[in-house]
Image (cartoon, rainbow, N blue to C red; front, top):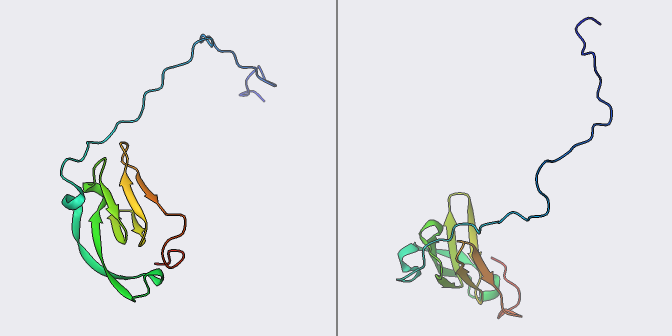
Length: 119
């Protein structure tokens, strides 16, 4: 064919001119501001929610805005944390804390009162 390249590459090999004896430095992700006034700043209201483990039917549960929580904030369950793309349910007996990177870390005791959490 007249428009095909004159050279065909078969089994190409790659070379790097970078010095592979040094390891690049990785910087940690940006951290968020520490809380200085507690999670109440993020409280948006409350709503009834059903938790089978609570054994009481509907329970009035505080609702928090995720984007307003700061590093060091702690929440005791039951609680609901809402953000634009997800909702986190903190069941009775669980606790949630915001770490320095903004992650919401939910911890569960070995055996929550009344069995497992079923919102």
